[in-house]
Length: 368
Image (tube, rainbow, N blue to C red; front, side, top):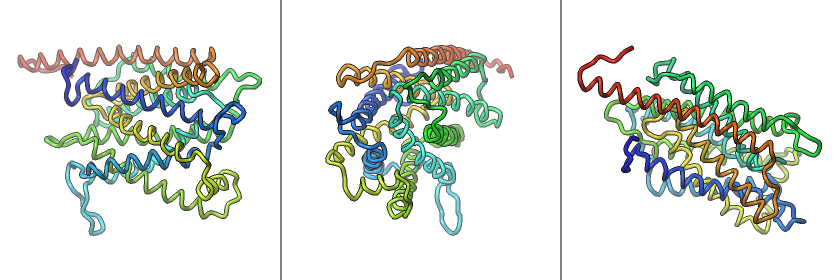
């Protein structure tokens, strides 16, 4: 495998990113359900909006602190552009919109866990959707000539199984279950998450696949600019909500969470820091050097799905939560089958790339 001994784009680097991503996502999954658990069961019983305020503040703060302290915002660009008398890297024109999408992804991810579904089901639905998005982004960028790759049948089969996983997660509602499909809030949250992530994944891969010759793939710079833009947007929306005269229950809870913080708000803020760390490793996996959106999306989503399963089991054993249902395991099985087909496609792609390199080395023209 590429660079097995370490370094940029190596298997070791990818595994390290996945290990960190997994660890912080387990903490995120457990803490969300812990803080939102019922007081009668010994949990804090925070409202979903309250926890969203504290956790988002904690996660965003740690991201900003790191990127500003380490000056990652000094992006290595293809070249500057002048607009309205201002001179800045041309990549800002699409990294900032990606940051706006991130400002949607961050709260909707947390809000998915506040619904009446298990951590595992929430992750299956979100992760299955992103696998489909990643595959679609590859197809689109190949058609546009941005990505010089071939689409394999195995990838299309994987997409079908990913859609099957989402269908299983959304279907089969029984009496007493959370009826996801008929919940306007749930559909709105998931829909917003999917649309924002689709745009964001496209822009991340556009950045990765359009680096000029000799320009480093500066993932840290992309992440820094994106997070700064996301923070500005979320702060602006937060201020607007705080001073809003709206009588919506959610706005009232948001206001009270700030003016009259819950006793454990500091711990919720700290728990949000784990989600902030997840953001680092998630972006670096999505933008991993030398990989397609489909492959990177598969690695990212598989890691988080395993983390979701682990979080559900920890909650069940340590805090008396519900164990995964049969439907949960079936959804996860569909995703794992999708992962298997995507792995076959990636192996085929790697094999053909190795053959092309050998042919190029002996002067054989590659087949078109």
